[in-house]
Length: 356
Ligand SMILES: [Zn+2]
Image (cartoon, protein in one colour):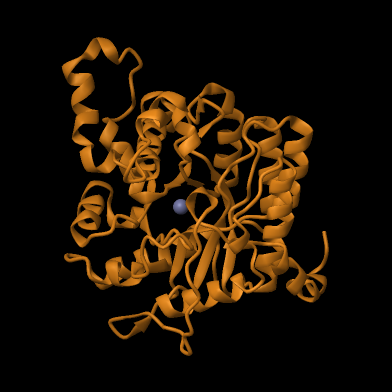
């Protein structure tokens, strides 16, 4: 582990080895000149804004599995483009994550790959500690290894939690195989960010999502999150580990928009719910966290009505250009107090991620 000075000296090198990419590792926001940094103010008070849904990738780690990025994303200028976009959009801090692509890797490759990625994430954050924090990557297909990787990343590298896919090589996150990992997450008290992958849907459903419209992403991603969270609720994982802090991308997918059905299911068909839960299914939504990436003020209002404003954190999906107005979306959603807006814009994330 290099010291801080070495980190700073190596900052340029660290940035050179990192490419920032969008969901599905494709797509780059175009560069734009922006001379001034937007400072977000709520009722006269400056708020430090935090984006919990911001992607990056480490190409040399991908190379271990023979996976290549789109060449555009390898541009050296990419980090400057990112900071410029953050300044323009009023994002003070990004919590970086890397979408999982390594869940089929064997133990030794997974060990190397994750070490390479987490070391690089730590270098990026050390080079610009006022703009970036990061979620650790973990090889969850090897749960004991993943727990060790998380401990090292949090305690030695200063990373702030872990990012996970919506499923792990065909297994649900609620599978008992992953209990040792969840136990470690709960013990550490760190935030986990769940981001879906199209590959998590399996071949049958992926087949149905081909064709016009990009449905594999548009529908598939939120659906995978919906399934993952539903299993964490209905399999009792959230009862077993009540201290977990889990934030899901894309507003939790479809789960909060049709939550009442989750309660009605076990009432209508009690024989299909042999495993008793400690609470009504929708009550678990109030112990989870969600990003704000639901596009309209009405959708965000509804998400908050189902989960509580204290459970929502800003997410942009940068650099995939779904939106460039995440701050205005939160400022423009009706019915929120100034304190609630400040919490969603950054204060809740700052607390959970240890951002000063
Ligand atoms: Zn994303």
